[in-house]
Every structure is written in structure tokens, then in C-alpha cells.
Amino acid sequence: MKKALTVVLILALALCSVFAGDFKFLFTELDQHPEILAGFLPTLTAIGAGYEGLSLIEGDLTQFQATIGGGYTQRVLFQDPVTGEPLISDQMLYDQIQVRWNLKFLQGFGDSWVEGKDLVTAYVGYEGRYEKAVDSMKVHEERFRGYADPVAMEKGKTAIPSLDEWFNTHYDDGNGNGTLKGNKIYPDLADDYSAFMTNFYLGARLNLMDDKMVSNQGGLAEIKLQFAPSFLNNKASYYSVTFNAVAGTTLFEMSNKKGLNLFSVVLIDRVNVNWTDGSQVPVYASRPVSLGRKVRGFNTNSYNTNFTVVNNLDIRLAGPEFLLDGVFPRLNLFFDMGWHAGNYLNTGHNGVAAASAGAMADKYDLKRFLCSTGFQLEMCIYDFIDLGFQLSYLISGDNMKTPGEKFITGATFFLDF
Image 1 (cartoon, rainbow, N blue to C red):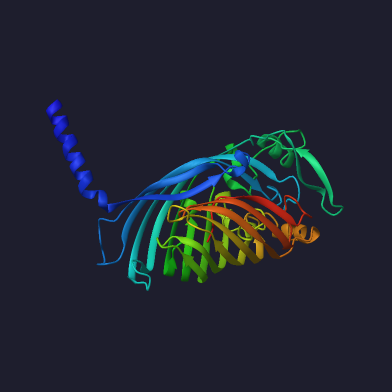
Image 2: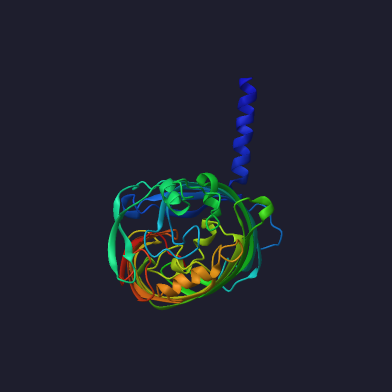
């Protein structure tokens, strides 16, 4: 028996050594909880592997990916769960436990002018996830949470309610009894605050960007379709189409004798256009497409309407790579503009009057056009962590958590584009 196990072990090690070069470690996501070390500690991650042992087109990438991840994060929601109206004060605050798994196939076509990169990479994939909402770790703690009366601009201090208290307030049947059954704005929080959800996606990426982290030259363009069919989900049914394009050029670059960066100046511009719609758009799908997420200084999940278009302009000043290639300080000077239109999500297909959300937006003068400027001072660690500090000045529009305030500060953990 021992001899047989020894033979099996030797064969397994031999196979691993043979195919080890065909596998690539993947580190795909980081997120944080703002209440844990002020957001500077990662509390969610996703890792996996890519297999490149099969080549369908000679000289082009063929890769199968499998990743898994999860963690503990905070969520803030900016729509009333009954009416869909924007919440100008006392937004819904809770924590979330999540687990996700992802399978993806990528195929390259043609050669980019950048050595070692394919001109076009097409992909298709599947993502599954389990999410469970729980009370905020700061439940019942008093916080300044916006203005009790946005018109009078009177700032109020209120206690953070539990999930049950929050929903009971909004779904009171007249006898003090709340229910989640009628929750049409946040379907993934209905019933027991938990959901298993599945979505599929496909897209293609044009790669003409020579990205060396401290310098950029060229451009990228990507089109992506993501959808969650209702026959596979009882709490999600939506589709989302996104076009993303990035152009960059290095204005100045100086290196030492070892080839490490001493100082560089890079100009980067991004255009992002999205349309998202459906009868049940879950929180995870609305987060990345909301206008407040993409215009720096505003709030993720705020200004979450069907259509958004954004332009992000950066001037990036990269400092010296002291000892390691890819580890360096950077100052980003940014100017962002964005516009949103259409219905607020989950108000146009499920019996909630979309006009109500529009009327509230007009009442509180929520602008269709958002604009901000500011800077990010961060330490870049290779191409996946950008840890630092951000100061934004809001030129047009309101940060809905702190309406009326123009200077917004926060931690940065990664660079979006």
C-alpha cells in the first residue's frame, strides 16, 4: 500500500512539473471595508489560475480561467426600496458577506504593435455568487448621515438602524410589522437578505497599449455584454452593455542606469458608456455602472440610472522605483465629467413609478451632469494595488452622503483604468 501511494505521489509530482509552465496565477480583485483600518486593509479578494496549455491559433493566447473569491464589505444604497426615489439623507447602510466563483475562456486574434500582446482578445464567461446582507458593524452608532432637510441644508445626526429596523420603517403595514416581500428596488435583499445569483458575459478587447505602469503609449477599447436570465435567477434579471476606451501617452520619462524609473509624466484619458436595464437589477450589477462610482468624489450606487457616459482625464506623475520594478509612488491629477439619463434602476419594469424617482431628483436638484477634480497620492505595488489618499472637489453635483460639501476625502485601493 505504501509503495502504491509512493508511486502515485511521484507520478502526481511529475505531472505537475510537466504542466506547471502551462498554468498562470491570477489575482483578479481586491476590496475593502471603510470601517476596518479606514479602508486601508483588504477584506475581499479573488484568486485563481489560468491554463494556457491548449493553443487553438498558433501564436495567439488561448486561456481557460477559474477563480474564486469572497470577503466582507460595506454597502451603501441610495434609493428608497418602496418608491425608488433617491435617498438624499439616511441612506441604507449594511455589511455584506459574499462568495463568488468565475469560469472564463479567452482567445486572442492577430498581433498588436506591442510585443507579446494579441491585437484582439475575445472572451466568454460565467459567474456565480452568494451574497448575505448583515447589520452594519456600526449599527445604532450615531453618525452625521447627510442632511435631515436638504432644502434647508440642516445637517442632522442619526443612528444607523439595523436591517430589520430599516425595512420595518419603510414597509410598515400600520401595525408595526414590516415585510421584505414587496421589495422591488433591491430584489436581492428580499425575504432573508440573501441570494444565490448567476450571470453570463461576453466581450472583446482591442489592445494597442504599451503599459509599463510608469509609462503608457497607445490605446485600449473594449465592448462587454453581461446578462442574468430570469429562468436561472429568482432575484436577478437584467442585462448591461458597456463600452470602455482608454488612450495614453508619456509626456516625459527619466530612468536610471538600471532602467528603473526616476520620474515620468503620463497623460491618460478614458471614455466609458453604459446601458443597464431589466426587471431585477441586483446591487452587485448596479455598483460598477452607477455614475457616482465612475466620477471620483461621488458615491458608488448613487445616480444609478439606465444610461451613463463618463470621461476621466488623468495626469500621472510617477516617482522613482527605489528598489523594485513596478513599486513606486504616484500623484494623479484628475478631471472627471459624467452624465446620466433614463430611469433609476428597477423603477421602469416592476410597477414602481419611474416618474417618482425623477420628481425627487428634480425636487432636490440632483444634477444630470456631474463634474469633479482633485488628486490621488498613492503607492503603487505592481499592477494590482494602488494604496493612498484621494481629495476631490465637486464642481457640479452632490455627494449624496454629504450634500452641500464640495471637498471630499477618502482612501484609494486600486486604479480603475
